[in-house]
Length: 505
Image (cartoon, rainbow, N blue to C red):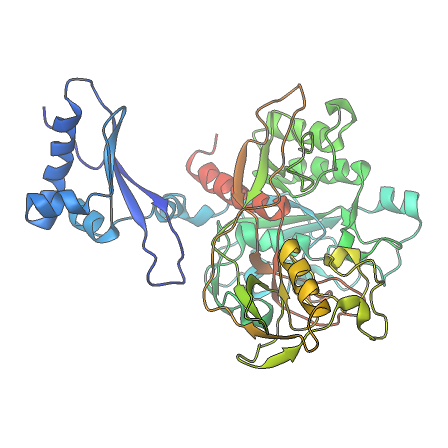
């Protein structure tokens, strides 16, 4: 019996797009075995396909990466072999999905978050057609936001502040904009991840990291912005903003009436709540009943148990995983000990320069961190005197694993002249996410539903705030990195929008 070739091509591994020595691997998949052939016969079948590509049976056997012979029927090959086998260019399934969905054209995605920075090039409406007639929303004006800030990409924008002001008092314009304009950046970041325009050229993060073209996951969707999260007086902006159930429920209610097709909600509490006490759960239930897809973030407190939020079964709950984007660099101490960490600086490091090493608590710097914080994350400090991890820092440096940090401290204490050389990294490398949320809620043991890229995601940024969100950091960037399930949620939202374009019902 002749096996039908090319059921589909599946991209299973992409080690690093930035390094030429790393190659993609493709799988030729035939379904499952009928049980009529032995494993040797199946292997011979697989070799016969590669014989067409390689020219000899020996070369065919040598080039086979995997031959799936037990239950799964298929084999894995290199891109060149996949191209020859298919009789043309090996296709990326995501590209096929984009084309079939027409890049999400005219699907309306509602983004509930901290607003939007409309001037970003990612929200240009160049080349887009008129706003769909099904749209019933509006462009609400306010501080530094007028109707001209809406266009054929940002087709609507509203803000919800009543509950927040009832609880915390009248909003000060220095704290946030009384309008859909984003002062905190998550809304801008997530909106551009979902539906930023195609191929915005010459984009990079602080320090020119990850330079290239930027594009949203579904670049032709329309964006409807619902600002219900606010920067209020008191908490540090680095600790996030405030979103109250009353405001969120009002935003979801309007989004349903406005005619959105998909809702993207990159927010939630620190623990799950009963559905009847959860504004997001209540609001999104009504959305789903009206054929609106809802995608929510799972929360960042993980990986401890009982940390998943947004667990209602009618929503898609997204956790975060890593991508192949780290910026590894090394520190070589004067005793030749070498430790590898991550670059966390927007400044160029001069290779080969020898630096004197001092312990943080011994540094005499105005506003220096208290001695009990020799190692810290940015959210644990109010200045830039000690480098941390996850966000771009205020001065040159490398973030190191904690135990390596202690090794350096011991070196400084036991050397009369401790020195170190910083070695700039040249490639990116993969690592494991620290944001994966876990669930042990008896209502739903299988949450979260799915994972998506959420570490070191580069996207549009509000020019009203620096990447660190610290008071003393006045840098301005059009694009920046962020991490968490809030960043993974819009990736899944984009896929949901593409599928909605193909299957409207």
